[in-house]
Amino acid sequence: MKELDPILHSQIRLAIMSILMSAAEAQFNYLKEKTGATAGNLSFQLTKLQKSNYIRIQKSFENNYPLTTVRITPEGKKAFEQYVKAMKHYLQL
Image (tube, rainbow, N blue to C red; front, side):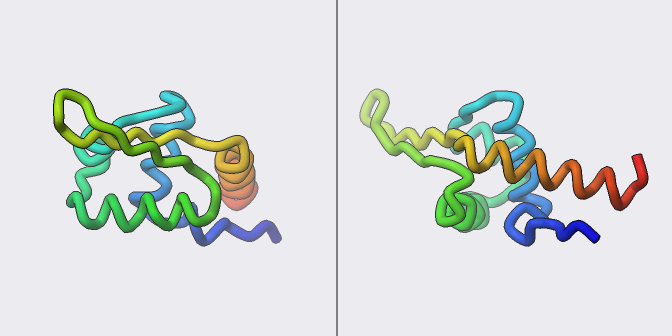
């Protein structure tokens, strides 16, 4: 039986990764809006993904405002694809 990646088996983290699979990168506020997460919870979930090397976080400034950009890594893409494959196996698709 295929195991589901516990890092990705979280609603918000899975949503973040799904967005990044199609967008390649996204800003913090966009992810916050799309996931419906609070800023604190989103930040916590992004840190978990970053520690697993699934995403890279770049912090900068734009017009004196902080700008956080999140990008998926090749390892993150592979983990997401394996997660989807495992889910298909469970669902017998």
